[in-house]
Length: 193
Image 1 (spheres, rainbow, N blue to C red):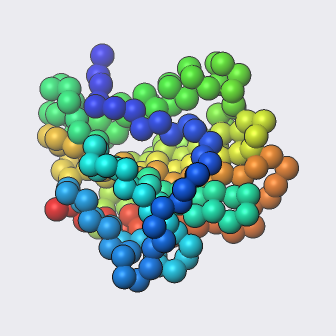
Image 2 (image 1 turned 45 degrees about the horizontal axis):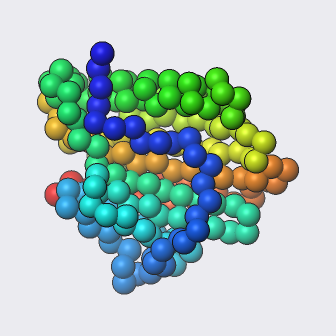
């Protein structure tokens, strides 16, 4: 069976204990060892870089009961059969595995419902992303999420970049503002080093 290095853990309804360092014009260019990106400044975003494993960066914004979050990380492809695969084949494997995990660990256990799952491709500027969009509904609220996968090459990749955006809305609340445009502008600046 095909496998990639790890699962991104997309399904957790987020609650941030500490949002991290506030992003301003002075620190909005985020550089990781393999990639960099620019977060819109002065919009209430905060960043946490919890270590160098997978070059994970968590960017969060909390307004009242609403939590907005961007996650960026490098995902190394470990399976030899996947290293020679096309970007689309790896993306399909990754997205399919994520969906199966959400169904097995959440839906089948009655923890939440998974709705409106759509997979596709999206071009932003000169970058092609493989996407998965979905909604998770639980007793505690709703999470709208967008997964974007970016590959350095169309085939024979050693890694890819995972970008995930979510909006967490408590039960019986209505989201008035979205920060998805900030996420899109952030991944448009994604640069591999």
